[in-house]
Every structure is written in C-alpha cells, then in structure tokens.
View 1 (cartoon, rainbow, N blue to C red):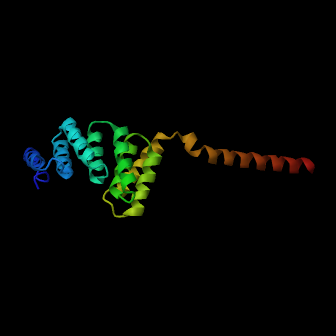
View 2 (cartoon, rainbow, N blue to C red; view 1 turned 30 degrees about the vertical axis):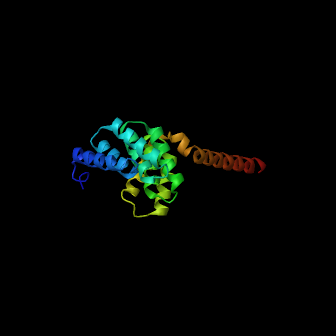
View 3 (spheres, helix red, strand yellow; view 1 turned 90 degrees about the vertical axis):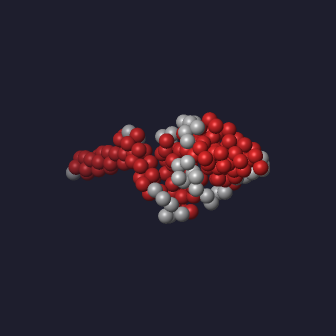
Length: 176
C-alpha cells in the first residue's frame, strides 16, 4: 500500500525492516527495488534488484522489475535481456512479452516489437494498452522504412507487367 500511495521513503524503510529480519527474503529485496525505482533512485534500485535475483534467479517478477529499472537508466539492451530472461523462465508471461515489445520499440526494432505484441495478444488479448502500443510500433516502422523499400517489390511487379504487356502488344502489331 505504501508504494501505491506514493510513500516510497516509508516503503523502503518497511522493506529494510523485513530484510533485517530475514535477509534472504527476495520478495522484500524486489519490493525495495521497486520503491527505489519509483523514487527515481535508479542505481540503488538496481543494487536491490541484484540482491533479489541473487537469492532467486527464477523470480519472474524480479526480472520484470529489473527491466523497469534498466529502462529508467536508459540501458535498453540490458532491459531487453531482463525481459528475455523472464520469458525464458515463464514463456506464457504476457507482461514479459509486452515489456520486451516496448523495449524493442524504444530501440527502433519495430518488426520484433510487433511480433512481441502479437505474442501478448495470443496470451491475453485484453492486455492493457496492447493494441495502442502495437499500432505505434507499426506506425513508427512504416515511418522509418523508406517508400522504395516498403513498396519497391510491388512497384517492380507493376513496371514489369506494364513493360511485358507493352512488349506483347508491340510483337502482336509487328506480326500483322
């Protein structure tokens, strides 16, 4: 409740008390990382995340939280690795796939982002903001792809069809 109310300082203190009682309480380390991240203390958040994941490397929520922290630090490649690790642990996690897509879009890798968003749609078609983020990735991909590359094959086919038809008409008339 403290995190949801925006009381990050008290949330960190509460998690610190829990950690003092049970230092191997990885969920408390992850909660502390979340509170620090929301308080914009990203390096401290990353350290807390390190502790959580050292205690339980198969903790999907910990890898997702780590991805959020790395995003805020602008470390998009590392963020991607965190989400891919979460997917490796739980391939059916729509949250991991969604955040992977979001990270890929931030790196300009729109086709991969769209495929990730499509995977989320398979897992949970009602996932919040899914269609909006997929649409943005498609729009950005189309805007970043030059016209010739996007429509080149179709333009070439049309040109060859016109030239072929013209050649056929020319040959027909020449025979008459």
